[in-house]
Structures are given as C-alpha cells and as structure tokens.
Image (cartoon, rainbow, N blue to C red; front, side, top):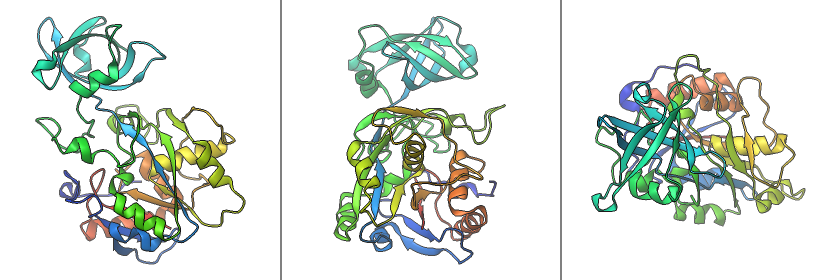
Length: 342
C-alpha cells in the first residue's frame, strides 16, 4: 500500500512522556471516520475480559562502529543474530563493498578505557556479512560496552544515538535480548497505564518475537516489499493456556505487529511449546485466527507491516485512516503516535 507522507511528520524523537502520544481509534472494515483519542485513554477502549498481549523481546545495542585494518576506513556493522552456538554472527555492513573476505575490523568501545576488539568479516549476500569474534568474547557484554541502539534509518542521528535513545527505544517490559528493532507499539505503555488497564479487568500476557532486519533492508534492489526474514519467537505456556482457555470471553488485543505475527504463527503451527522460527507473511487475503484488536504505530508505505495492518482492518479503511492521520498531523513511524484497530 502506498501513501504520501510529508517528511516533517516522521518523528525524530519520542513524545516527552511515553504515554503522551496521540491515539487514533479505527473500526475494522468500517467507513466511519476515525476517532481522535490519546494513549493515556487506551484503558477506556478496553473491556473486562480482554487479554492485552505484549512482546517482551529486548532490543540489543546492535550497531557497532569501527575501522578497517589496515587502512582505517570507517565501517558500521549491525549485528543480527548468532550463527548456531558459536562466535560467528550475521550482520549488515556499511560500506559492504569495501570489505574483502577475511577483512579485519577494529571495534572500539564507547568508553575509551574499555579498549577495543578486532573481528574478522566474511561477505555473504548483498550488504550482509558474517563476522567472527575472538573465541573468548562474551558478545552480548561487548555489545553493551560498544554498541548503540539500532535506530532505523529514517531517524536521523548523524553523530550517533542520543543517550535517551537507550531508554526510549526499549519497552518497559523488555527482558529477553534478541531484537534489532523495537516492537514500537509497546513503547507507549507505562507502568501506570498497565495498572489502569488491569483495573478494568484486562489481563496482560506476554510473548517473545525477536525483531529481525526488515526495517534496514526495505527498498533494496530485487527485494519484495512484503519480504520478511525468518524471526525467532516463543509463546510461554501461561500465555498459551490463557489464550486457549475455553472460559475466556474477551478479545485478544495484540500490542504491535510483532505480537500479532507471533500469535498467528503459533496458531498455524499448533501452539508449540518451544522456541520456533517463522517466515509468515500476513498481507492481502490473510485471515487472522487469534487477534481481535491491534494497537500499532503508523508504518512505512510499501512495507510488510503496513500490509499486515491493511489486511487486518481492510485496505479501504486503512487508506482513509492514514489520510486522516496526515491531515491531522499525527507523528509517524517508530517514535510516532499510534492507532487502535478494533
């Protein structure tokens, strides 16, 4: 789905308060005008018996900056995931064309006193590489001292991420490291908001889906607009039991497209009780077996995320909602406002 978006509506920073954004409420499949609300009013749109499902994946500080050895040319690596249980990781590299097989790259910690680390780079597909860390490296610890939040390219940070990004590009319930992009709908939720939501008789459940590199690969030559890389997910037993409880009468309200994808993938796989990988694409013609309502941000045109939202609520409905959002000057994308599809 395509739409025109003035560049100034792309949010470069989050709202002053997590729950300070605007909320557009949209009826699925309806031609009724959207309702303008606020994130702080989200509890008013939920009902006793509903289950609000969030993604507890934690964004890793996946962006590393370094220099080629020898020569000293600048290199940026965005680590994606480990290759099995080894010191090798998949990554996106920039500029990838200047990296030869076996290229050594020195990465420096943000604090000069924490030293540096030399990795070896092996080019793979266009823009993608495999990097080998020294065998004794605790990679997650090194990312903590050397990495930056992997902000998407439309958030302009020419001098690197701001200190505040480390907190605000992370949900309050993020616990399991593995994502290289935030499940952004969850960025709006606060402890106070969750307390108010529970007070309405709504239960909170969690899933894990580690968000992959689709945001950073969008628009590359030869890449389908609906392409989605396989992503790791898990549905905890307590969440599965709650959602499948025959006595449950309320709606399943997914916080974000990542949560939606995890739930719909699990349903299609028979609700497995172990870690899984999914390449499920939800777009035109898809049916939704689990999710009844969806809290989501405003997404990029021609993206798999927007295709999911349009399939869920109806393309005509979403086209109207997005046109209204542009006219009403909503803030778009990761740090922007949200919509609730009910």
